[in-house]
Length: 141
Image (tube, rainbow, N blue to C red; front, side, top):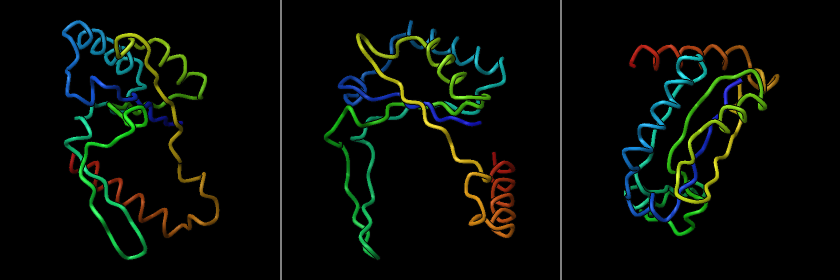
């Protein structure tokens, strides 16, 4: 099972305050532990929403909204993608994570859909197209 682990933003991350050297070292060690255990697939920090944009869809119309975005507590400051056998194991890994922010913080864990989760709607032809796309992406990296 793959899980996306979402690090919530706060006022500091939205203001562009970078992590301390100590936190960077602690996070690096945590990332290394996950990599050595074979569970870490990806992980990155994100720039503040002020450097981002959203694209809103209304039928065929597209509207671009530039950041920053208002609800800081609803924003993401970083993520990991991990592969573990269960939600319980994902939780166990996240509980080992250094506190990413001063004071209270929250990390959300969400399971990533797999092909078999879509049932019959994900036809053999669609599966083959998805496999070709994943192969092409892997070859680019």
